[in-house]
Image 1 (cartoon, rainbow, N blue to C red):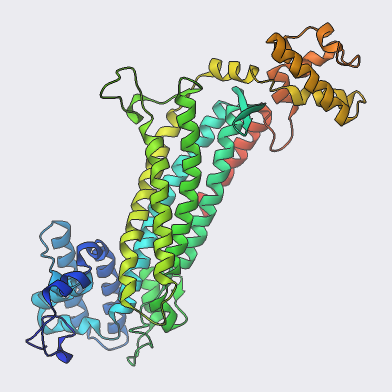
Image 2 (tube, helix red, strand yellow):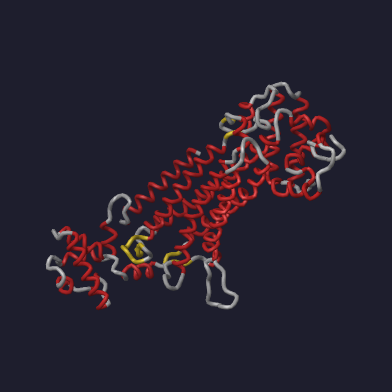
Length: 467
């Protein structure tokens, strides 16, 4: 190694790297987070090298024991991270050589930092996806149970944030759950493409050593080795795909958050969130602020930014590896942390939502939410839909003038707009009659909500069983 530099690559250089450049190009301050995966990959690599005869069994065992000891040092906070050694890989390799001597230098045989870091990131992503999935499952389970419990709780359904038709709170929650179902599927699909092993691609063209990449892939739990060495070391589309999933998930959580914020306001007064998910005001003692949903709503833009950063990072890179790719880790790490924390917050909070059933019911009674039911009633009586629409519009105008909901009008009042209306109209003008009438799959009828919750519960259980 050149005396002018302490990097592993210093032999070609005649002067040391500028101190600022060393700090500017180093990644160890953030990629040390990959230490566990780096050691995991190195242990598998050493095991494979021994199987193909590149290392002796004794050298393999010495390397593995040294790496295991280093893992302990890192976990105990005793490891000395060095910026001049640039990254997590060289820090661990240098420490291994310090501990076991020249045998430590043999570990890097048949690999490069290019395939090493690509493997580490995929191992990291696989671990984090599994943690994130567990939180997503927990959120879905809590949401399904709450929906089942509130299958009969009537609330207004909205379009354009205007009262449209009555629905049940359980039905609304299951709409959220459907969003999360698709997010869950996207996450599992992403995991399949993450779980491909770059190790063995070396710098970009493979290696001349007689490695067995299938052995290493099996040891690390990958589905298969990557097919092309150039692609294996140079693309980060799996990270972009994860961040795309994260952006869509956070978009959904943000929509839910917006509704929770509205519903906790005095103007809606639909739900109460337990105090542990809220904060107060430093000046207004009456305030109870829904900080958790507000923060989740705010963090959504942060994740969108990471997606754009990664897309931009990759858009102009020629094959194969480029130093640009060092910039993939910080946005990816933050996206992972943000998604995991937002899901944990929601999984804790959603089952604890307390609906204010009376407020929801009274809100559904306002805004003529059963107007469509009256139109459907007239159509079933033989009135053309456009004529029925006009009749109901006149009835609503009368209700606005008299401050009466359709269900509060007398039969005589309703008949002034159409003689077709009879006493049985009140069976469809009640909120209960309105929601019960939508008794088909996907409808808001309480029986359908309970059936949908049961199907969702079974599908989620089957998904967990397949995992």
